[in-house]
Length: 113
Length: 113
Image 1: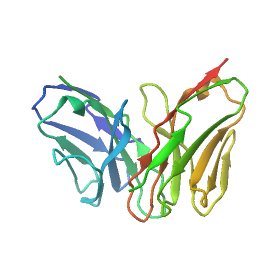
Image 2: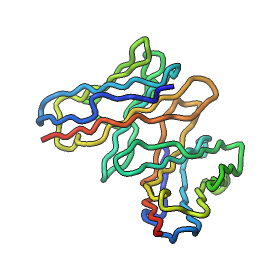
Image 3: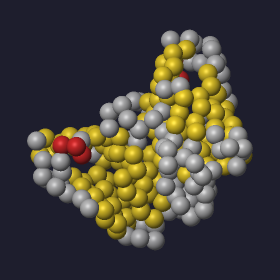
Image 4: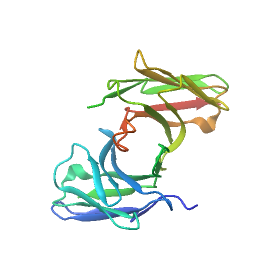
């Protein structure tokens, strides 16, 4: 099976702009989670989607939002970008049921200038 | 919420030696504990995990132990090789509350040939 894919892989944006990142989970996986990775804060949970519904949300401002489509693909959006939003954004997918393993995509490196 | 602490933050060993990384968690309801390996510029890769109904799990040179009473779990790597050099992250989650992983701060393992 193909792994988790994310697009774009690299992105440079200006403060105040907005950005949309995309994640395609492993075929058959219905849950998608998003994480932010920075040198200072490490890996932090943003939110999780399952069957097009947000199931959990981390401690991030409302500028961070996401959605999931019927084919399980997910997008996350960050509005009014700030310099501190520069990070590696990772998504992870997991099958449903009693399988807990999550598999990460390669991430999108976002740089805000 | 859950809090995961990981020690040490850096670990340098000689090739062939063993390496041990320790994590503690705060939420007694957490029941799933994965370990991820992240090489420079790459995605986190799941290397081993353990559920709370098991005390120890081994996979070749890697083992994880869990002490639910003390709320800590450890990663053991035996016969280390230079390709084991990477950043290792522990995480904890409550499987019945979605897929939110709370990560430790990471351990940079360096294996010297």
